[in-house]
Length: 87
Image (cartoon, rainbow, N blue to C red; front, side):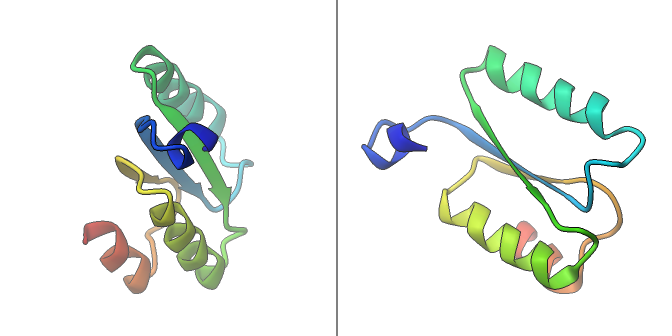
């Protein structure tokens, strides 16, 4: 994050998940992290505890860092979250 603030743009992937306890979470996250590392990208992660308000706040915060993409894992995002991601 510090390099991005200093003006040295580095690709960033934001991962939003309801919990790290999802059965497939570790494998999916490891795959994302491996590909990101190969491409010199950073990965940021937020856990929402299945709370739509936390989910929306995490997505807003992630967009504050101007990620190159947002990956939403787990259940269907709320309508507000879906609109933020689509925009």
